[in-house]
Image 1 (cartoon, rainbow over the protein chains, first blue to last red):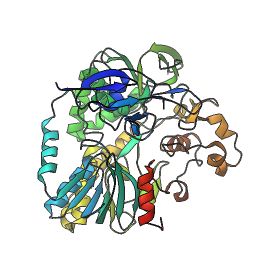
Image 2: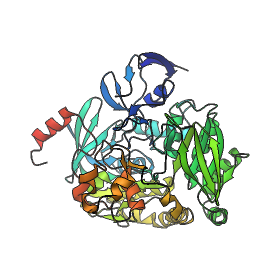
Image 3: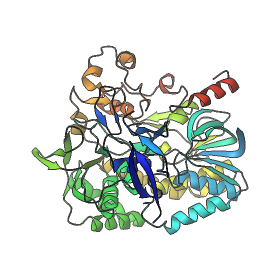
Length: 79
Length: 431
C-alpha cells in the first residue's frame, strides 16, 4: 500500500494514501481545537457539517474530515 | 470563472448520480457538484484499506467516460440564486456554475440530541464515525459503543467491527417488540432483509440492548466511558468512542436560499410533486432532501428528476409504482424507530446545545422572549451556522427552532474565503 508522510503539530505521521486529514491527526491527538470556553473538541459529524474538526493545513483553514492527508503538508490543530 | 450546463446537479450521492446518468443519456450536459473527494455520497463511501468495489469502479468509470458530465468534487456551495446558479468554493478558488435547470440532491446529516458529555472528543455521530473509520480513522483494538436508534447503528457497528474495533454494546432506544414488528415486514424488500441478516450475523455475540439509551458521556479531556440506562437499570461501560445517531435530517440550506417551499415534521424537507419539481420553476429535488427514505428511494427520485428535466415524462411516470414501494420502506423505518420522549429529556441546564458558541440549554431557557434567543445567547452563530443545534432545539423546545427564511438564507451558506466573497460581491452587487 502506498503511503504519504506529513506532519501534525510538527510530529511526522505516515498514513496510507487516501487517508483523511482527520484520521491522520487522530493518530497524534484527540483534541482538534478548543471551544470558545476552552473545552477540548474533536471531530463530531464526520461529514463536513459541524466544523468541530477545523484545523489548518499549511496555514489554510480546512475541515479535516473533508480533506485528504497529502504528502509533505504541515497540519496544525488547536487553532 | 463561470461555466454553463444544461443541468446543474448538487450532490453526487445515489440521487445525484442517477439524475446525472439519466440526463447524460438523454443528451444533456451536466455539471455535477459534490463536497466530497469521491462520488457516491455518504452511503457510497468505501474504506481506503479495501480495494474499490465493482459498483464503485463502475460509477467512477461511467462518470469519467461520460463527456456530457463534468464532475466537480471537493466543492462547497457558498451561495446560489434561482436563475439557477451555484457559487462553489474549493482549495483552488471559487467557480460560478449556471444551468437551465437545477436538481438538488444534497442528502442528509445525522440527528443527535444533546446529553451530558456529548461534546467530549470521542463522541461522534454514528454515521460520522463510520465515515471517518472508512477514511482511515484508527479504531483497531479500540472499545466502541453505538447508541441511538435505527438501522444506521447496525450498519456503522458492522463497518467498525470489520476494521478491527471492539464493539462493546449497541444501545437501541426502540423496544424489542417494535423492532420485531419492523423485521417482520422486511421480506417485502428482499435486498433490505438480506442486508439486515448480513449485519446481524456479522455482529453475532455483541450485546444489543433495546429499550435503552446512553444518558451521559464520561471523561475529562476525552471520552472514557458512557452511562447506559435500560428500563431503569444503570450501568457504566468504558469505551474510547461512542457513535450516536437518532436518524437523519435533510440538508435544506441551499433549497431554502433558493426559495423552495418546505414542510416541517419538525425538521424541514423540500416539497416536491410527483416529477420531483419544487415550488421554484426549473428547480428539482431528489433523495433525502425530500424526506428520509434511503438509497434505493434516492436513486429512483434522481432518475425521475432526470427524466422530468429531459422532458421524458412517460419514463418518469413509469417509475411511480417502484417509488411508492421504496417510500413505504422509509415510512416503516420512521414509524418503528420513532424518537421516544426520554431522549428529549437527557440534556440538563448545564448541557451545551450550541457546540460552536458553547451555549447551554439553561442559558436558552433563561431567555424570556424566544424570538431573541439568537441575539442574546449567540445560539447558532458559530461556523456551523446552526446546522447541529437548530434540529436539536426543534426537538427539545418545539417552536423555538423553526426555520424561517430570514434566519438562515443569507449568504455565505458555508464559511467562505474573503476572495470568494469580494469577487462575488463585485459581480453580484444586488446579493
